Image (tube, rainbow, N blue to C red; front, side, top):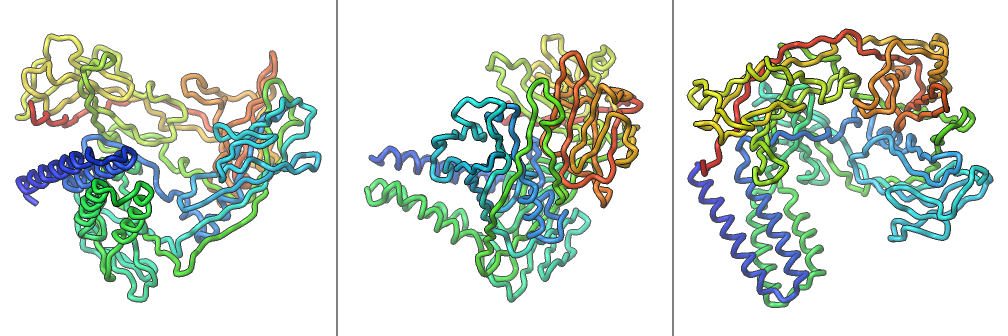
Length: 585
């Protein structure tokens, strides 16, 4: 599509939206009119993004990996078992007035959890409110802010919850097939489990793939069964802003349905209650296409270094798994307590901590491609806004972030840093710095500036910015039998008594917004780091050093204590192309 053709298509889209909205004003049922107007706006947004598919996205944004843990387990059933077997609940003691559930991770497939009863330490089993039926309370409990609360005031002598009884129902795909590739793989064919993927195009912000499915595949792949992801440098995942549908007539058929439905609503021949079923049927029909050769394309809000496509073929029979659960309740002490209130529990099924695979920190050379650049535009009419444009310097995920907060990473307050800033015009010539207020400033996240203060719109900026790094993190490893005095490992529980144990250094808890005095890590039998269960439990003691307690998913075979080690500032040479001026400029 040429630029002229796209401009015409965008104008036609806007005119179609305006005509629909004008018709909707003639619908007598206000609720039906509101619903259809919302559907029009969703269609307009999606098709607008589709027409701008190949454009650069200036608003860099990240998202979590869609399936970060599925590859940790032998198959999807083992993945599900690890999720369900590691569910725990927490209660504050001594009163145990409320309790809540902590899943081990976010489960990426369709799952329904029903919590039915709670067993008490005196043997009584109490029914919980039927949340699934819209009942947030019963005679003994109220469900509020994702917590179950006893209605009656409780004392420390009352029976305590020990186990939550629950039922789970999960629908799993028949298979989980993951492909990874980059720009060098364009034209190559990758094969897994009888499916092949051939990358056909790989640009800075988009990629296209051709998918060959087996001829004997029982159920066709749908749009939702083909998951596209993009990884930037530093292993950060980029937000997907648009995808091309398998059905090439997707938008044409959606537009035809909207046109017909709005007309029927004007004539009074359709009810609001008819809309959900019609939309569901339409989406089901448009979600796949015929044939064994499929084409998908994805566009992202940032520069792509590596692509990942995951196929989720569906089982011919409904692959729904049901299971009854008994979820242990852990105790979190409040105030001055002793060790007897701590729960004894062992979670054998490991859940791994992926973050610890990140590098300790990065060098000045690596910063030039590991620090990603994001942009944002602000409305100067707002009273809290002083700068129109923002450049975000997105530091990669590194281990040193345990010891330095984001507002302490960049040393931007010196006069030397301000004097190093130079803006350039579109021809590459330096622009003289304007004599005005709020021309530019550094923030804890990057640089803000006002392009309107310059004689021409700035196209590029350079600066020298010192960055605090910690490349030499000290990691002391201990076996359970060799732990320092004051540290004890019981099952999956690590207890640290700071009245006995004196660390080499403590961290700034207020600056880093953490409860930890130090950073402890556990490694399992495979020498992989285990994820921590919830946050650290701290037992405060008046006029004495506290006790901190860590629980882990899985049985630790060794414990590591991390210290920040030597710190150093390195100069990051900022060299950023700036946002283009708006068309009105």
